[in-house]
Image (cartoon, rainbow, N blue to C red):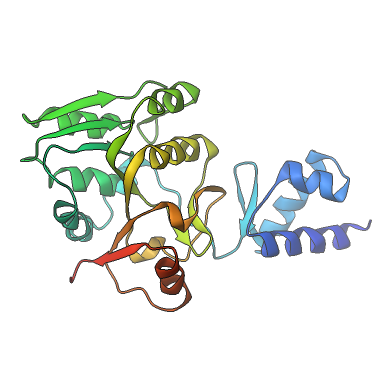
Length: 253
């Protein structure tokens, strides 16, 4: 197969599937992984796709990847407005799982007067919750991601399986008609388990995270119960949210 023919096939596969791993492409096209890596670099230089860890996704569908400090400094006032809706959904004396999102961190600040039992894989969330007299805190074990300040790994997932909570509060990296996404498998597996262990799942996302995708799919839309966001959602995405019984809450409601 000629180089340009292979590049064209790679681009078509990724556009059709929404993402593809290096392993999958190598097997599909019967070439080495190193060949695929070089092809992806070439295609990215032509702005045909966006490379992510272990593979690639189409241009325009990827959510921006930022470290903890960068995420913390983005649109704090908007995060507060979105997070304030949490108080209307959470009941006193609830059990909750919090993921490592900075928007979730802002949401936690709305719950200082609640009597709650909490579980988290976020160092910053654990420190914040420790200041609340009526909150108990269980910090999950695992390997530390030094840039994002969360714990992950098989030990984290295994510990999560021992809990069943009233609410899982999840910050959204990317959400589309195809479900919820994250840019790494390591964080995605933890979030997926958090969703499975919550009786109700509340996802929080501003409009910039919607109609976006990442490398690793966490779950389908049907697995979340609420989506809190800042702007009214319309069109196909709203239809799919309704079809999957996801209640959308906006900051103006």
